[in-house]
Amino acid sequence: MSEEPKKIAVLKGGGSLERTVSLRSGARAQSALRRLGHEVVAIDVGADLVRQLLEVQPDAVFVALHGSDGEDGTVQGLLEAIGVPYTGSGPAACMRCTDKALAKYLMREAHIPTPEFAAFKESAIKDLGVAAALPSLERSIGFPIVAKPASQGSALGVKFARSAQELPGAIVGALSYDRKVVIERYIKGRDLAVSVLDAADGSLPADGSGAEPVALPVVEAIPREEEFYNYESRYEIGMTTFVCPAELPSGIAERAQELALETYRLLGCHGVARVDLMLEEETGELTVLETNVVPGLTETSLLPLAADAAEIWFDLLVQRILDSAFTR
Ligand SMILES: Nc1ncnc2c1ncn2[C@@H]1O[C@H](COP(=O)(O)OP(=O)(O)O)[C@@H](O)[C@H]1O
Ligand SMILES: [Mg+2]
Image (tube, rainbow, N blue to C red; front, side, top):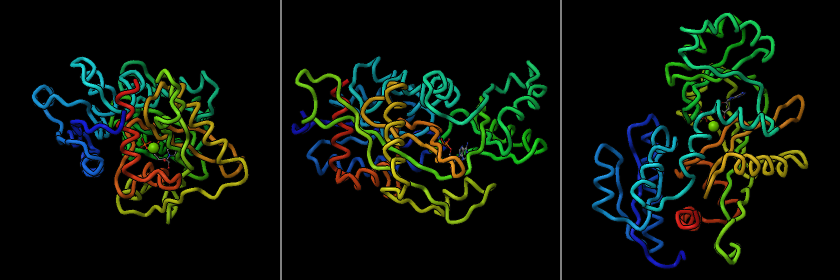
């Protein structure tokens, strides 16, 4: 199905905080799609998105939109409403992944290890007196505590609190990015990511259904400087080195891949996703932090790096993601 040239609309940009990254992901996807022989129409997502799609009449949409509307199921729902096939996960999976609180409750129910946590809406602080519950949450979670907006990416709004004095400030900081906050146990350890890709055409069952997802090699993000509070700038100024395949103790990579696949299936992902995990230094335990349904495709993004390590070169990666539009 992948050999025929198609008319593909690449959705990128948009109004989210991750606009710049999305423009870069989109530009790279466009070049790859052109090299693959497809006709490409780039759409910087805005108020005239639907009108443009109706005008262009693409065979499929390649979703390269990170952050809010692109990852939270809004755009996916819209594309279903107008009947255009699109890459990646459907609306429900997007909603489950983008809401870190929901994803963590689902993982906890399914016994997929995720750091101890609590989650509440801003309104619960004002209207339900959540502040009075903080001492007992602090006891059950234990310091340091991470406070993060339930739905953001690229470490935006991730705040750290070492003590009860610092916790309210961290919560308020995270709440400036979203109306819901997740507070969770800080895991001292190594930062890992496992990308999952649906199987290539060749390995599809004859009836074209039930493609088995595969986990790519593990990527480790190694900070060049252990600066607790300056988390966001660490990403901005490139103070992180990425290693793939990560050099891990025996059995850990396999276990991380297994957890990523379990999480991918649990949340109902389709096509592609990237699962972020932590490997705790003291216990050697792996926990799942979150799942990204529209992973970055830039020169420095983790998915292309992991695909390279599996000898899935960038154009093939893009074609595989495109195929996911036709296998739903
Ligand atoms: N509980 C935690 N313990 C230690 N580090 C964390 C924790 N939560 C987040 N981080 C750090 O912040 C980064 C971003 O957090 P993550 O949950 O992946 O959200 P997002 O990538 O959507 O901003 C992680 O990759 C990790 O380095
Ligand atoms: Mg992450």
